[in-house]
Image (cartoon, rainbow, N blue to C red; front, side, top):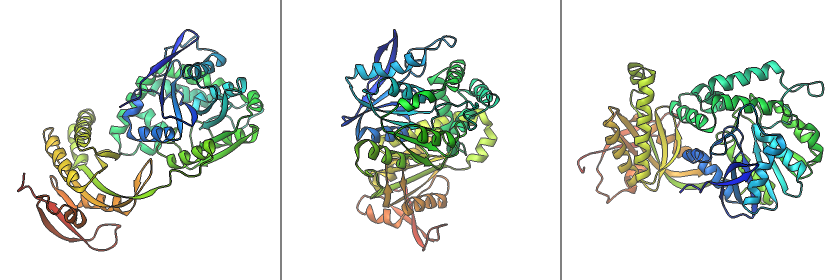
Length: 447
């Protein structure tokens, strides 16, 4: 169930917001241009990330005016910075929050800094992600970007907004062989803003200089930054730490615009400790999991035969079918690659039946899949499921032939009495996994 989207009135315009969680800290999150309160819940990683924030706060999500499902804005008459930051204040008033922490990312940073300086009584703390107080270089900031470089980024936003190319630019960690994700991300951009609106707003915030306001921000500030983020250099984060009266810096390896896919667990732990004083509540636990890997057989060859356009359509159809079948078996999708996925289920029997359902469903669109299933202890955290069990599951899937479902001996032993039938496929050495493994193919005699 998605949170209810509601609207606050600000300067005659509608500002969309959602509220999840029950506190004890009010935490307002505004993510800048790349924001859409309705579509963000279609991303399992984002859903887990936001739910984790809501586990220790009353999380207030906002699309600023001109973005997502909030009021549209004319490109040639954008609000003043005061008016735009007042949008956040209007939402806080609407939800009855008298003192809140802010989590502000990327181009929205000037809004948070402005609000914290003008209304210190309303802002108890602030987290700034991949942010800058002044993007452009000048005599006082040699670390800023030259006007020509910023102009090239504005042109990139205008020309590539809503395309897979801009998705790869914003999220380099997901650009390799993940066409389905890139398609979804491009759709997200198109829903968040139009190309001209995105370019106009980026240009507006690129010109913002809130350095004179930093000395007036007296609340505690946590600055979080990806070391190799292309739009804002790491030096900007260091400047914020050194100039804000009460700031600390968490510098992370990575280059993404978002923290979802690079360093998410670390960011969540640090934010919780920063806001609540509780230490490291998201440490990975070791939990028994059933792992399912599914991939398309001969995906590269099929893509070549079909051509890019038809292959994209076929792949989108594939993921739509697979996600439907996974939902039927209450599977949790952990990761999607360009031609397959990795999910966890409640047990081996549902995993086998789910794999069979996927195999039958995708055959209707002339695709053949293979699947591997294993069960064992994994390191489970909000962003990921990791460990040797995961690697074994992937290697088992790689051993299977098209149309086959292979399982480990562990899985076979766990489903004794289920009526499922298995054929021993011999001891195997799995790449990168120690020892010799007895693997089994799921037979179809019982279907």
